[in-house]
Length: 398
Image 1 (cartoon, rainbow, N blue to C red):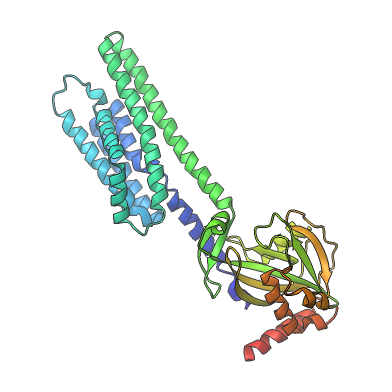
Image 2: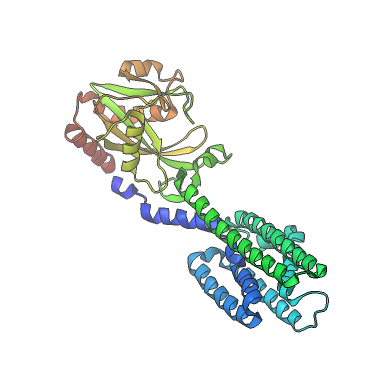
């Protein structure tokens, strides 16, 4: 049964990575064909700029289709806009220019487009929500897009204004304009590299952060959410957790939760307990928790049962294990305030006094019904294993 609960970890992590990539789609991708058009046009002319930028836009469109399929429509819109802006620029170059140099005509067209985009930001946002109402990543991508638009708007505005000022001054015009041109291209290049690196760093941080799987009533993963987001959300999500009851001679070792615990503060609870992280197997979670809380290695345990329960801030889909580990336990005070062996009589006398966690109350009942507390001292790979498997088989027959 435990093997059926491994969650297809590799597939789920790939989905998480894809979700993060879609939620933080690099906005620079929308502008790269346009930036390439501007730069190539300044140095090699309109015909070369059109061919190079259009080819690059087509390659980028194919890439987005296969790698970011869910937001392909969003990127396609910007590809169409790029073609329209480039076409308008070509049309303007065919007209006689008297006041404005043809060297900055394409920058002026793009600058005008960015200003219009900023002025109608709210209306564009409404259109996006109407076209793609169920696409969660679009909210963040929309904010990221306008952050980049403002950056490019200021760069273009400074370049165009400086270029015109130098042109009207009339002294060493070509020299100063060439300097401005190189500075302008350098800033665009730096800004593009900065955005690429920035988004990659954000994605890497999100992958490293603690993400919890969201499961349904059958324990199947249906999504994922950041740990603090889940605990602070009004909606309660169901998360898989691991729990280990350590028993010996009819007694149970319990931990008193520290005041810094997210749940069950100050209550007595299972000695080993933790949430599964996204991409983590049940076994790895148990071993990680035993090491973090008590510096235990080679921790031996056996599966007992799984159950679902609603607690203060979430729902738990718990995988319950038992162990008779007798190694010396080094308490990590961040997680645990105190450890204590409890007899059945002590637990029964205090079960309804509010000093035990809700999870432990369920687990104590499961443990009593399993008969394990009456077996005395046990070895996880011998007697305990036989008893648990026998109990599991009896439960299936019933």
